[in-house]
Length: 180
Image (tube, rainbow, N blue to C red; front, side, top):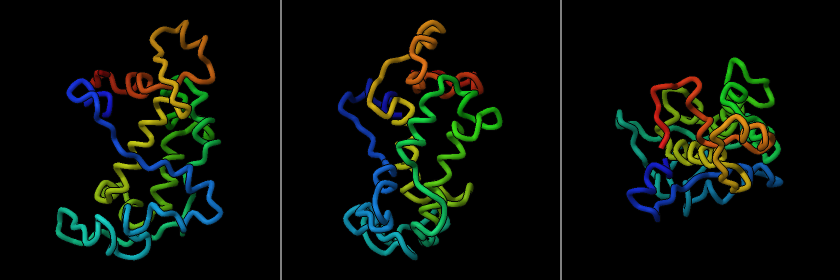
């Protein structure tokens, strides 16, 4: 998304939530991210922060968040393991091996936040959803910030171990997407 917006405004940057920082904390529930100055409280209905009393399309309040009661967050080891793969088929179900399955790993933070973030039909209603998915997009460009783009099989082979990039995220299974 960020790359698509940059031709219009080169200064644009998308905020994201890098949950590997919380993963590395002694007690991730104590993160400042789920506090009034940032995303609001992480327990019960969201009543603090910029999303206090956030209403869903059906005018219900943003569901209970129950941070840290289920699942786990992304770790740097998980991200780096996934990024050793070079093709979408290697990181997507049903063909990915468990340790390389990005969809499986990405569900951990959804369940860790709890509430609406846990449901397939409701996750996008929590503002955390966009921040979490923006981080997944940033991972696709490379955790270390290396942004070399893979365009040929020869380059793919020579960059084995650090070659997964945004260009390889969609094309194999989604020919109707055009990458910018």
